[in-house]
Length: 291
Image 1 (tube, rainbow, N blue to C red):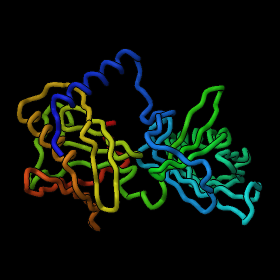
Image 2: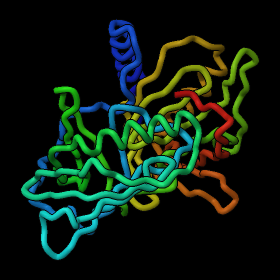
Image 3: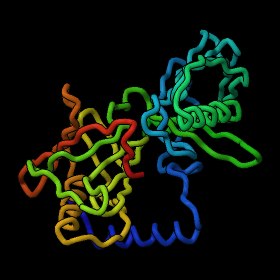
């Protein structure tokens, strides 16, 4: 897979112009994205477990994964069907009914009372407030679950991936240590060490000069980064720009990943016919990875 740099810049320019025209940042995850694949409304939710992959707000880095687990009695359509999960800080449970693509979650959700950061608690409250407003669900041919809700007369959606597609890479943030065995160049004016965040199915970060935005998929230990990666268009020194382009090319040529027992993330990528590696260290909650 090769990076089409001209197409990348063109896409970045469109994205930048759109953001300026709107005058404010757009939601990290579209709230009502178009499903590319056909969906099924007949598949039962009972006995399934899901991890959030997209909703109207960007997941807060450092929070616990947001999950749903649908438990059911042998019959269907009873409030004895139970819903449990984690909301980023606390666990919750409640009752639900489902059938023929319809889903109703009882408003009386019980939660634990653990305290987390203000950002995580605000995210948790938003999520728990949306659940009782869910009206329907669908499961796509790609295996993803979409919950459709109605809030203040407007329709939105929350998407989830099945538990078997979830990876420790999700909801994590990293700083580059070496690229093809070479340490990255530092920028004396700002933090220029390339960084990455994996949130839902979105990849964001910095290449050392510009902010990067894209999508990724995981299949086992295989990592694929969509070549249509967008970036801002700041100008930096030639060495930094060259390093950034090498970093972007490495990402879109990613093949496999591994999180070592030492905590490092290693991404194997193809450069020509040779396999090279990106090595990252995890960022702590105190660190602020670019978004």
